[in-house]
Length: 421
Image 1 (tube, one colour):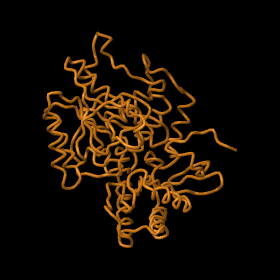
Image 2: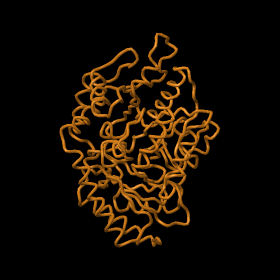
Image 3: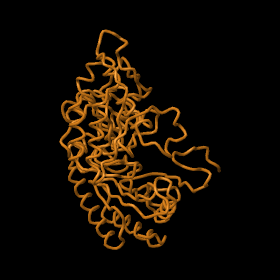
């Protein structure tokens, strides 16, 4: 039977098989045909503690019997109040205000609107946003506008607003990036904000830079009174080895975007946290200065209950120890792979490893990508290369045996496909 589903990031004209998944547990998903597939990318970077974690599933089940949905404009509910309060306790000062949305892209849209609204409401309107080369912040119009221009958004160029871009601070180009940010911040057309993925650019190819550079980027923005937005949608919740990537640079953003692991990856939810200064700029007896943003499912009670269970897991269980254990396993497996197959730019940040494969074509549409993905499917591995960039980002509960199988599959793919390394 032909499916009516239009899948994301899928070229249906290629008629590639799409397996029907029936259930999941821990670090594995299972198909209706009986295959067990190791989830080596956390189902698009969202699953932290493992699929169908008992505590999160129990919280969802309990909340579904009490309150499923309520308009959040003019109303509130305990799951949202508890989540906001506990998030503020967990996040660094002075991030004291929590705005709910329902996806990473929308949390970025919220952040951009907060920044522009702040400057407008204090009577100093600013409109320019600064971004980093190769960045990716989502697929809605504002999020695409502050991401890299290319195959992801070339069809929608007329809708995107202009931004100022600094170079990616690759090794040897760090000062160039810092100087560019400093120069843009001093232009007569004063920027409103700089948005950045801290320490690692995800969809841009798992590109990594140092905490020292991140700290200097923050200092430049502070010095020139430009708001600093940290997009920790992927990097948050332990992926980089700490709760937030910003911790490693000892910085606090003015605005922080979180999603993906916020609910342990179980259900969609996002938050945008802001400082009292930004919140206060929207507080007035003038209703025209309110923050004009919402979605129908803002602060959905069931999603908030899942997030509360996730925060409880972080409080009660040794999550960071699991993160450190996984980081160590990743390091040893990457070293073994490097010993057998020399690859380009092998790198690691926390629980994430990545490397490039030499290919005639590079970037997201590199022809080697679909070949690799087909091989990994044949070995029952969920690995989804970013073109010629292969990365591994599993749930924290993955076993050493499953991780071995992941790296054996990578090794065998390179050998079988005769990829020059």
